Length: 208
Image (tube, rainbow, N blue to C red; front, side):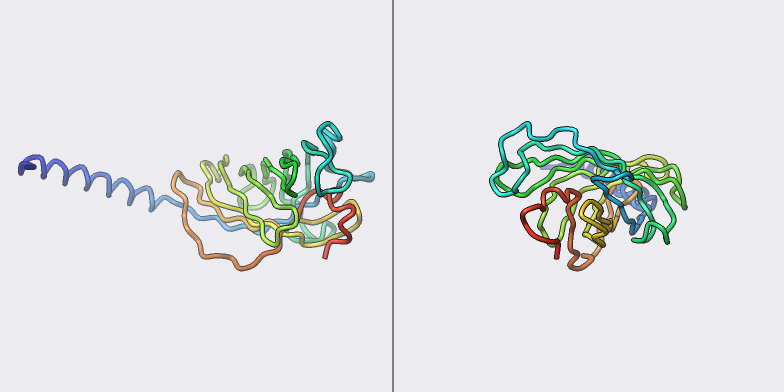
């Protein structure tokens, strides 16, 4: 049987842990952002280049694509979808790779660097699996710096605008907590996601 002394000790431990978690919860700072990333895979204003192309076997369902195709990006990030009518608030820098031999799937690893606004100088890191033709894509936020230090949460994205054959605008809906403990949010509804890789869509027809 548990002695009275042991029960008191256990109660003390539980109380201390509860107080610690309550204090941590009070320090949680939820951040909600809506950003637009301009992904340009060709032309004089190109922001995305092939690091690896045609090195792996041909993809089973994506015409002209190969398993392992990898892009590096340095995309402008704006507060609205129009690049000329919106302020530039950062850049999205990183890579994405065609990571399945059979499925139309990318793996992305992107750091969003904010250079203006209330989070100027802060970053957050997005990582995860992207279904190229999925109506809704969700990736994880796995870290951050500055005012977004230890950021955890998630990002939804969708194709907001098709400017040309080599230029799309991707909407990023960001929900993070800048603390060790992640917050919970209600679902944002049905968001249509977009792929960064326009070249993978060749042979599939126009983006609806």
